[in-house]
Length: 425
Ligand code: KE4
Image 1 (spheres, rainbow, N blue to C red):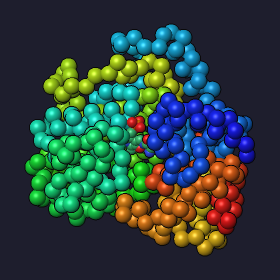
Image 2: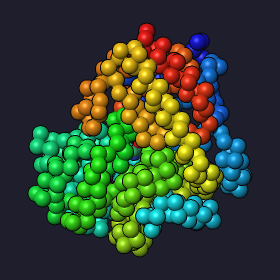
Image 3: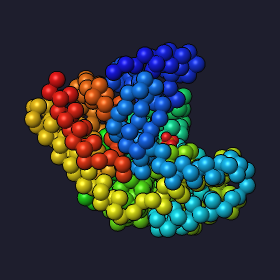
């Protein structure tokens, strides 16, 4: 594979963009080598600036569930754009989008659109604190909810006492009111509520984690979050930026039959354009300005071109698609597990619907400590081996891989062959 143009672009990029990329994981620092610069995408494929084509398992980190450049999505965006890009005023498309989202996710009684998942979770937490008048936020190690200060916090020495900044620039004052527990640890959750339940404003969770690799909830874990929040008057927030519309028409909450108080959506909801959503119980969301005292605003919130991509995407999701993704996913899961077994590599595969991870550690991976035991060097070699064979896999062992409507059984079989060869070498 020739990568001359990508290399030249990377050199130029590094001179004017931090690490040459607009989001850290794209720099390939965890896997070595330089990132290919992508020229175009079509269906399940992306092509880099040197003409190399890849089967894409990143899908823009989730949005591309219909495949890249779906003709109906592109024409909806072109139609909207031809009427003007943004007005800073209400538009019909925003109403159509909101009616569609609240129909698909019934727990969403009232919503607000924003421009990124970060903005959605940041706003949801502010509403939870404003509604309850409480300060403490509970999150789980390995879950990522965007880069708002109070969510870049790791467990302090006494996990259930103080949080510590997980990034420079986050003050200890901010970190102090975010407590971090281990994902899937029901006992620790219940103990925290027993000890400090009356101080807790909200618990935020990725109902199926994608940001430490794909880690499903153990039976009773999500139920415990919803129940304990209800018992103590705290707000349960399901961060479905990744799982929303990926794990089914009603996301993870639909799959597991739960009703969180608030939900955040992004990625697929915007079909690849900057669009995210927070919302939920009407009484809670009625606290948001100008109805109530919690402020949230945005120049491009609910942007009509972005919501046109969201509408065109969501309208094309149906039960048949998720059945197909289940079949493809089972094939890929069995194939990757077989490749690891055949090559004697210590690994395990975890999947929910169309999000999957090959962990380079023995399973099960139940929480971040388990995920962190992976052999990072082996993952890096695996990633490079796949890339050289035309398979574009997430460039971090803490990211889930995604596939969508345009992936075929042949793509899956080709991926399994490439994975087997990469693992064998
Ligand atoms: P954005 O601000 O990136 O739109 O969304 C933040 C976010 C919130 N919640 C969940 C569950 C998320 O997965 C994300 C963003 N995910 C990462 C990848 N896992 C985005 C890719 C990146 O950071 O470059």
